[in-house]
Structure formats: C-alpha cells, structure tokens
Length: 329
Image (cartoon, rainbow, N blue to C red; front, side, top):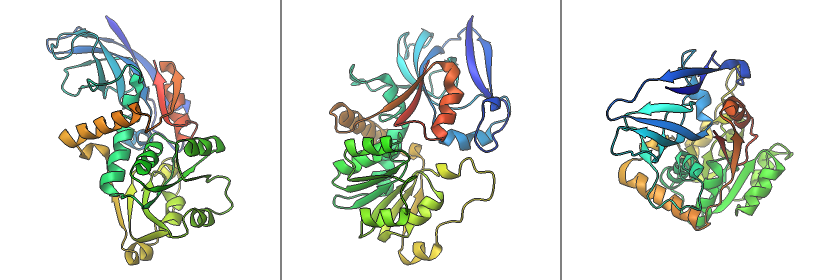
C-alpha cells in the first residue's frame, strides 16, 4: 500500500492564511486498476490564484494545484513507469490518475533545464504571460508597457517577452533585490513601489508620454494610478489582483470610469487555459526555445520539503519569493 500525504483546508481563510487553516492528512491509496497510473510528486507549485480558488473548497477538501510528477507504477501503456508528467493532483505526495488529464513534458525538453520550469516559465505562468501580453494586450514593437508584481513568476516573463518584441518595459516590484533582478533581465525602468514617494510621479518620470499597455497582476489603488496614465486606445490585461485577495473589509474603490470611457480603454480579464490545441503547443515551444537560448531568464524560489507547502503558499502571498515559488518534495 502507498501512503499519500495531503494538505487539506482545515478552515476557510479569513484575511491572510495561517498555519491553523491547514491540516496534513495521510491516506492509503488503493491498488491500481487497468488504465491507471500511480504518480509521485517531484515539484509542486503555489500560486496567487489558489487564495481565491480556495473559496470554492469545503473544509476538509485538499488544496488544489499542479505538480510535476513521476509515474512510479503503471497500468496504462501511454504512461510507462518513469514518465514525467504535469498533473493537477493538488497538494499531495502521491495520487492515482486514469491518464486523461495528464500532460507529458515536451519531447524536446533539454537535460539542462530543471523539470520544475514546467510549473513556471514553461508552464502556466509562462503561458499566462505569453497570451496576456501578445493576445490580450496585442503588444507591438515600439510601445511602452507597464507591469506590476514584475519580479514574480508571470510578471518577469511578461517583461522579457515584451523586450523581445521591441517594447520599452517599466516594472514595479516590492523590494530592492527584486528591482535589481528586473534590471538584470533587461527591464528599461524598475522601481520599488514600497519606497517611492509618489507612485504617480514615478510612473510619469518612467514614461512621460504614458503607457500603451498595462499588464495588471495587483489591482486596487496601484491600478487606479496606472489607469490615469494610459494612452488613448491603451490596452489593459487584467491577470490578477493580489493586493485585494486577503482583504477583510470593503474592496478598494474601482478605476475612475471617466478615464476608462474617454480614453476608450479596453480592459479584459483572462485565464490562460482559454488557449488550447495548436496555439498552446506553439506557445510552449516558443517559451522553451527562449528559455533554452537564454532570451528569457528565470529565477526559482524553492522550498524543500512537502511539509512546507503552507509556508511556501503564505510566503508567496506576502511577496517573499523572487520569481516562481516552488516546493521540492
């Protein structure tokens, strides 16, 4: 019998999650049936969306999420023992799958790249950056882009793809170390939004003519300030609103509607899995190629030990991580 350790929601979050909101449980998994595989997690992801998605969970449910896993036992010829897959198994060390939702890593995955990148720059965050920037924002060479949470898993890839496309890129992050990283990977302007005297003045100085595109990961007051500096026909991709996820009181006031109307802005919310089939495969190949060639640099913030899943999640929500937050089992 295989014993799976899983993190469950002991009680629903109020404000920032705490250790007492989680419970570690152990269950024995049944023998495999024909067509099934047994997966062992290698790397697990923690992402901002989980804070919102957890509202749909009942107390006692397992936390959701992707993992890079190895097939350790197989009764499915499509996934022989040893196959590395991307699985949406949640916060668990072992799971059983019928193979339908499993995704093999690209066959051209180089030995030089860590498998954990399938949860980062060559996975959901990379795809989010790719489609949000190229399809939703429709960014073009010569334009100016603003991206916040710019040193995170999504924002850092957004900025680097925009540079590949010939844009001027302005990024905001929450520490001086993160700002230094953004400058290292090619951002034209990067600033620590926690230490600037005036966000409005900092944005004006970075791009006096305003912004063509805004890739928003933060929401709230930050976005209200950026929206006031959008150019006519500016495009806004609303990817996330992490500044509001842990609030307990009233939401912050929304964007000033007169600016949205008279600047004829387009704001569009999106989720990465809108894009499937050939376009998704092309995006993954592009991301893998750019990362392999060093055109997109990446940084992983790895915590060791499955027991540290809650700590990694809570730390990510507070901005501890530079780049993609990952747990190595």
